[in-house]
Image (cartoon, rainbow, N blue to C red; front, side, top):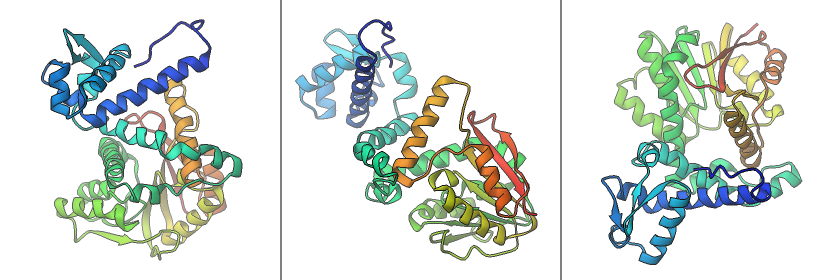
Length: 332
């Protein structure tokens, strides 16, 4: 948790160094299971180290640091979770989000300077994920959980006909929820095989294998089909260059029937809330570093759409996910 030091308490870089160290200690606590081990109440340092299988002295030093940052409370010769820690950092859910971002920031950003020097990604983000199955699992869980959260609002906004093409929707959450809401709808989900492994299990569990087709492959090369009424590109264009996005949108236009709609889900380039805006900047730089993309403005996305055969899009900010919007455009 931030220390909220007064602005004249050392140079700004010192504050940032402390914040980075505090976050690194937090993620060590998450990976070691410190907060879950304290979920049922305080433990002595010796008992905590025994439960974690860690060195008692190292456990004490980590615990003291986590007390300084407000994640733990000192209890006699041991530690207890702070109330906010119990609410946010025990169990799965938000704790998994932090485990994911800690690996991204402390491992994948090691050659961030290389990306900035060359203007090209220093790593292939999805190949990097594929080499880390646990990180990939958390990433897919984040996407699927977020999709579930916004699904009712998405369903009320997306124009639906008889057929749906979901480009890059490997977890298949939106295809499943839209098919459940529209009994005559049939959907095709196109994504890489490792992403569709998650969607395949979800489709089978929903009993929709006869209505949701999973088509594995690279959607830049795979035949997308034709005659679709609606196409979804959710969290897709931000991971690509502008040139690659124009090529993909032209292919999506070819896959749509006349008058068909494309719907994009993207982060807003600028957000009024300072913390949300700062996260958008972190996210944008991470996209540049690992995929060559960034958070693009609605105006730039609109230019790609009109250049590839669509009308100018209408924007629908999401109340269920502030800082994100659906952009809806019809094929001319």
